[in-house]
Length: 321
Ligand code: ADP
Image (tube, rainbow, N blue to C red; front, side, top):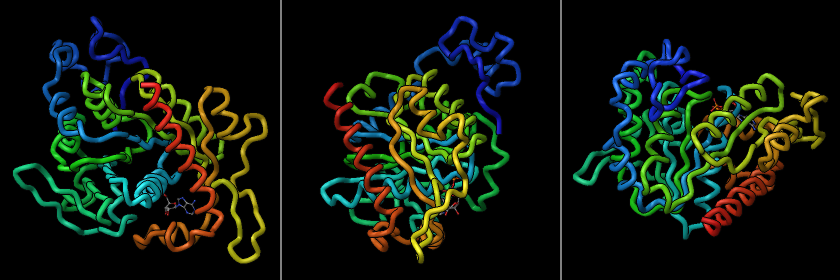
């Protein structure tokens, strides 16, 4: 998958598409032509469509396999446990959409009407939209180039008929790719974004290799002015469901203090740890509602604290704005 250059000058810069860093970027030609500089009409469409969404939470991870989709789905389920709140989850992990499976709606069809694409409802107050509903085969999108992905992200953000939402959780691909750049441009561009909170939660595992990639993710957020609510450490210790003894399967490296140390270094909130629990993995694989089924499990209890941290942080951001 192509990714944005590390030293991207930005689409609005005079040197957009002309710097050494731009070489090899799929958007180089369009940036160099200046076409990327004018206001993209897609931004206005996205802002209009999402004008009745209060909070948008982008879930990011530096690497694949750290539990980002698992966390996104738990977050959507957890937020929707308040029946007064309407929640949507949008899966823009184009090359590996796993949200339909985790939410138990694999193979569902989305319908198009005059008011846009209707998402699939898991509960009355919980709607799901994923590229997985549109692809013939999950392998279809792997060969797509940047502009096609960009077009799809724009469609996803501007054409889904969510209605009024309190929270929209967006599950993104791992790393910093075209999809992230497109999504943040459409979401953060224009004045419509000023009436809502748009922020990221970053998911990692405790190992140094995962943390190294999270740093890139945090640098990306800074570059595109995307506020970060905080960092979650997933697969953090294993509590045996039978004997309740805890073992650190991926111990954080001693010199950096794991995700908590990294969050401190970046001055962002450490939201908490989610332990490895085979029942969580199994529940997600079969599309079940882990939080409702095992509410007393250590993973569900840890998640409840993380959720609390996220909602209060969003509420206070809303007050400040
Ligand atoms: P990503 O979206 O980062 O690629 P996934 O959410 O698909 O990762 O998770 C990768 C695998 O790890 C899945 O099989 C998932 O069920 C499992 N998994 C994620 N978090 C946990 C956890 N805390 N305990 C047990 N299994 C987990």
